[in-house]
Image (cartoon, rainbow, N blue to C red; front, side, top):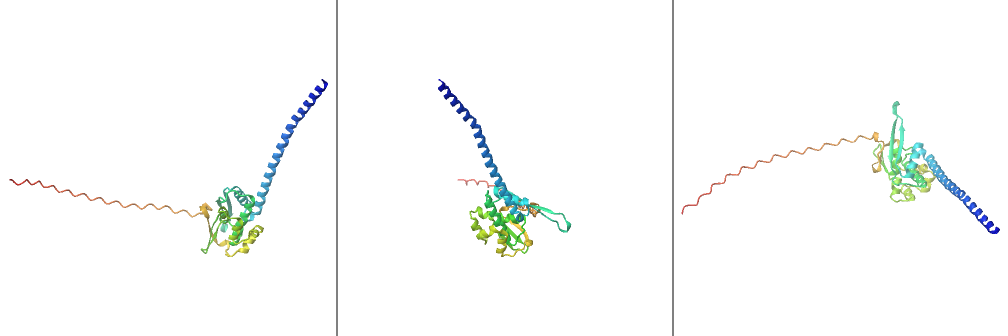
Length: 254
């Protein structure tokens, strides 16, 4: 009898111990999940910050660089802003350029390659301090129209990537070695420069896909010409009166 009571006591103690351990395990599991999520978020934030800092000189400002990194990463619209000082003491002007990456979402490694190739392609054209519109053209494609009437066609790094080309092929088509570009985009572009274009001689930028830049400074569209009035139809001539039918001549008498 005493043995049976002792056995029941041991079973009860074991069950109580097991039940007490369940909350502790649940708490430990929850803590591990939270820790993993925090580490992932921190790594993402660190990578974004690093790329933003690296490409701030190319983008013209920290805000523009952050917009580029986030837009290429998420495949969302990118809005770049720049302020140009007025001449002869006049007021400064602010222009904006908005475009959507052709590639959709990309990893941070691909974002770095895309921005590096874009920077190199502009440096090759003699542009080392690009405007927002020039950055957009280097990424999505466009044309630089120079003041002397000549043009520089930019295939667009993202446009080529969206067409299925690999990064190495894109770099080769631009006249670069991808390794050189990743080491120093600006230096690689300057070494490959052959057009000898001066940044100050860029008259305007024509972006591909109809993406405009600086909508406020665009020339106004010509007014639609009114449709030419159709000439009035001439009046139909009146139908001449039908002549009276002659009376039937009677049959001659028999």
